[in-house]
Amino acid sequence: QVQLVESGGGLVQAGGSLRLSCSATGRAFDSYAIAWFRQTPGKEREFVATISWSGRGTTYADSVKGRYIISRDNTKNTVYLQMNSLKSEDTAVYYCAAGLGGSFYFSVDRYLYWGQGTQVTVSS
Image 1 (cartoon, one colour):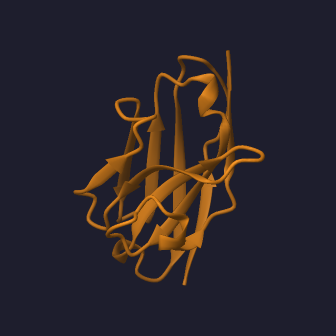
Image 2 (cartoon, helix red, strand yellow):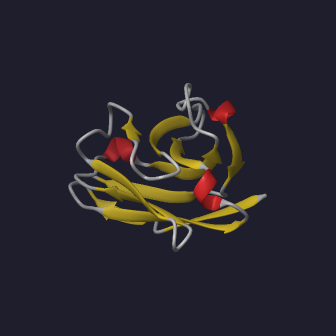
Image 3 (tube, one colour):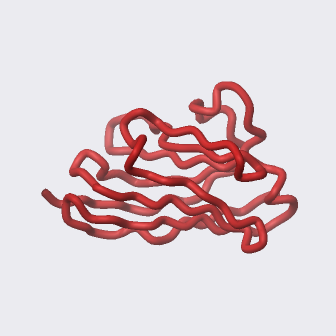
């Protein structure tokens, strides 16, 4: 069992930056791939980025590639999402999730544990 808690969301102007954190408690955090998803009202949860259990493999959605950086510190049981050059369309609730990795990393069905989400609002 893994419990995930997101933090670091808030209100930022377009062009600004935020860093989200996903802190985990429970067993074997470093065995899981971690992903960030985001969701806006009335829309499905959207894949943003994922990082392998070792941290050596990362994948990004095209919409955030070059602007976001995902990283992890297994000694702190924490995954980070550095978000730069934010746009109004990045406004959403951001969720982190833990799963076993592999194919279909972009699907919510691949993930076993979810955090409660943190709101990111980008003003234009």
